[in-house]
Length: 73
Image 1: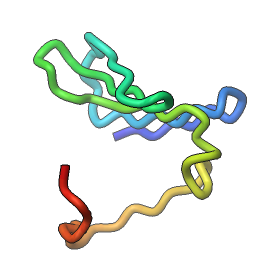
Image 2: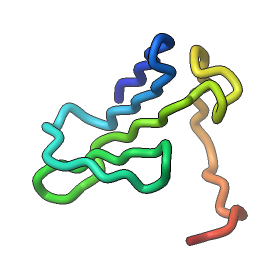
Image 3: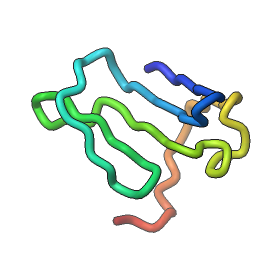
Image 4: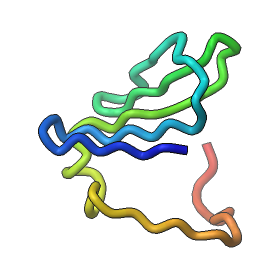
């Protein structure tokens, strides 16, 4: 997994693997998902990231139980 933050464009990108992006889809005004040719999500792009995350230049990686109490789609 690779996390890239471009401070000049204020874009945060997360690539889940190194598969080639075949298609992109805007799911909300500032959220874009990348798909491979099998239709699997391989990454995401968050625009205007500094307005949506506490600090796009820092992250915490935690191994533990997933939050299953949040609302489900």
